[in-house]
Image (cartoon, rainbow, N blue to C red; front, side, top):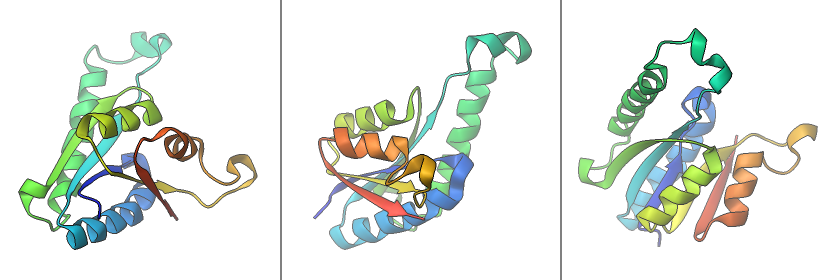
Amino acid sequence: MFKKIIVAVDLSEINLAKPALDNAIALATQSGGTLRLVNVQTLLPATFMDYVPADFDQQMKDNADASLRKLADEVGLPKDRVSCVVRVGGVYPEILAEADEAAADLIVVGSHRPAMSTYLLGSNAKTIVRHAKCSVLVVRV
């Protein structure tokens, strides 16, 4: 069974994150595994830097960290089995890097139902599935 589970959490689309998180919680409960909630904050383009405070990126990371910790507190697993991290960069490279660093055996990611523009899977979910070194569970919403 899966012992180290990474859950990709997009805080701006919590409706995608909740079903994925619920599935990950069920798997971790059954296996006695751990959950690692991961949120990725993208870098602000340099062209916007003149229009935001100097510490904007840090503020966004701190806000994401607080939201992620609140979500982690609601998981219902013992505190020693749930952790969270906010990474900065591209979504799929950071999720894949976190999975590698944590030696995860499962990545859980939410995905919209396909539309013409995202037929089959969204671009981040698709790339995670293609390049992950571990199993990936895509939870459709």
